[in-house]
Image (cartoon, rainbow, N blue to C red; front, side):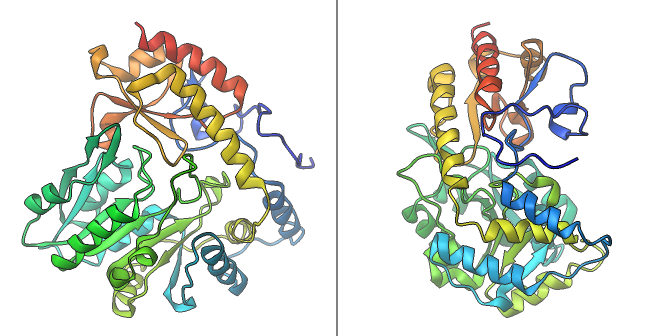
Length: 378
């Protein structure tokens, strides 16, 4: 069957029966899923066409990343951020999460890591996976925006702390950190002789037109050699099932230690994953601007329902909503009883909140907002 192309963002696409993690979770129950970070928009035509062309060859064997993928990624960094990176700085991976864990594995068991929370839940397993101690330090809420509390991070810092992990843009709070914030973090990293791992996977998904994404290794170059920055096209172009990621590591010694941890930990990247990511990195079309227009409209409509419960969002399509005043004993059950599947804040390290994915067609969002309104007033 031919793949339908030029699918409008507001066209509802039936995903049940396709083994979708997002849509199969609740089985036959009347629950709309707004939980996992997976958009309900069709992947772009240029990605589907590139995949169709590759499938004309009948063998899908083990695959090395093509030079053209690396060149496309380098061009993409220049186009979006003005950042010129050398080819040797780039390490290709099967996903950002393996990269996070590989970074922690460069440490020894007597060292520790620091992670500001709430944060994307795989971060919270990094310490255990790498057999190192982890220090969780809370973000602080200031005028509706979540910020890193550098002073408190300094107070919590242990003598054996060697590495800090952040998400920028921040997941689940939706922050796109400012240059001033990144400079303060960089000073903290330098002063305490630390390394920094930054998950930048949501870097193109800037919802607030006044915000911008700044890769810290480029924005504050004096700490570049202390950084591992992780990128992927999967969130922006909705191809999470074709995972492929890049780590940018300017320091040769750190890069060698990182690559040494690939053995037995991560698998290679498949040929279709390479093809899809290369198509995304070469994109200079209006697909992302159109996507952002839709996401911004969806966010504004979500604001009318969630109101001040929702943190100010600058990036991602994931809203962070405070529901502590509802006094719920079972957050998941409460929202499921109202026909909503959301992410419980507990898994991100902060109870009493939910994360709501608003990347969906208007018809789906309309029904979801009606259910959300009722769930927040009960």
